Image (tube, rainbow, N blue to C red):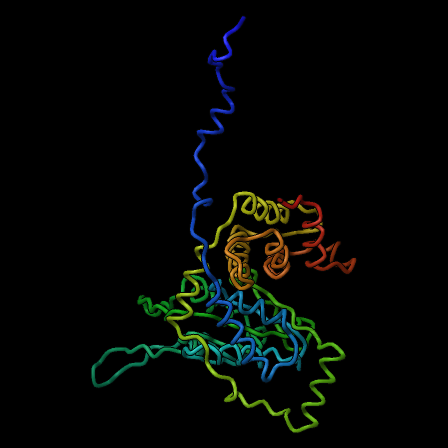
Length: 346
């Protein structure tokens, strides 16, 4: 009879599984975003003193602030694009500047210019209004291409080069630009290279019926005047930098990275698109998803974060074919089709 105590060789695969190293993320300490959510909730409350509704728009704006990205706001006149940008800037205790783009605006009016000093017989650079931490560019698509191109370097590299000298921007540096739809009279189409430098392009829509009634009721009661002084600053530059460092600690699983790459990669082969998104779009989607997850109090990114941000990240980075444009298609429709066609990781 066989000895019951006879040693039996274990299953090699079981040994391999038992000895396999556990992913480092399994032991990584969880990041507490309680302070971040409390401060961003305070920003929402301050802006809510004046703005009625637009909660999703505000969430996307805060996501961009945490992700260190620029934002393009598009909507018809009168839907509070400029007001929303000004209020957001006011909640940040940093230098603020506003530039009104017009057809006769020159690059030097934005970036600055060198002025000759007779007493020293040399040139002195005088910074333009772009040298601020939060820059509101109002009606950005009313300036010609020459002025638009002046923003390429400063938006991407955070520096302005003048007469061979590079002048770095202070941190943080955030551009909030507003534009009317290109069908409006007196507007120019923004170059693709400039559009690609915006983290998000956000559509500012009309208020709902209930929200518009609330706006009218407040105005009728004498509460309609917008006193920006009522909005208090919440975050300093140091506070914002600390929150951004927290966002960088987010956990992102490999299947989420692959999902982002598949979404962006599909825009390059989709039959309805003439131009697909570049790797910069993949980075924007990743950074945005990390910030959104933190904003919602999580220390990990989910596929739902990626799906929520995909239209805002991709709509200005892809171009429809002429045939699809003639059919009345939109970039958002194509993005939705791509998301429906790609398996969601679980």
